[in-house]
Length: 109
Image (cartoon, rainbow, N blue to C red; front, side, top):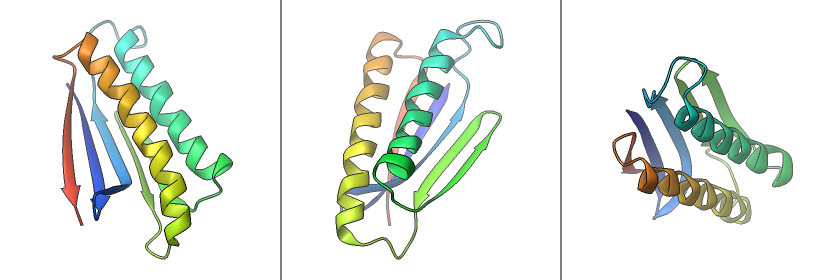
């Protein structure tokens, strides 16, 4: 199962960790894992390359983390939040089609 841990500050998403595997196919051929990876990596690009917001990013086998810097200004947090919310909507869409493959957790900081 893939776990999506969303970190929020005052209800606004400021980071996430996505970990695990969907186990819906052979390694390298799992369509759910591929879709999740594409959405997550696109969100990271949206935050860092399009919105130009500083974030700590770690991409490893089976685990991806993206967290905004502590000193991120409110306008940058707002812009990044739109990307985070779009990523979450895309992942929830996958969850609706494949309910036993993803679960979400929120953590308020």
